[in-house]
Length: 115
Image (cartoon, rainbow, N blue to C red; front, side):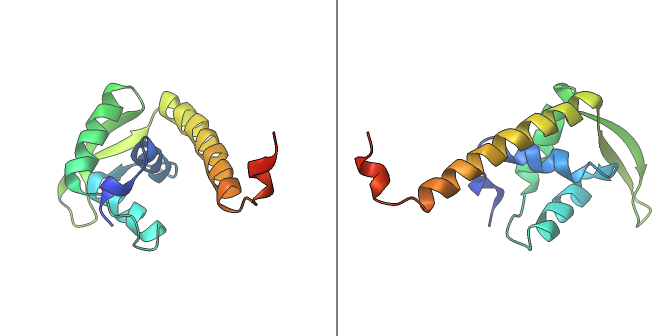
């Protein structure tokens, strides 16, 4: 599925989560999201790199140049303290949202008639 099926803010959350264990380059972030989601979520480069730049401007990420596992030069992104704080807040918000949606999807007819 293309990245466009993501709910608002979800791409940022996924990117931030991918960096919890340490720095990754853009391709590595996309690969981690794809593998962790069992190949269901695929983030297009046209969405990923603008998001990384936007998140860096917000102070959630920092970047440094380094070598990939194939010895190519790449920009590696890592979380800042502000980014880690935002990740924690958004994770909580998303979990509350998912719980609410799960409740609606499993809701019964009685909920319609209750004032």
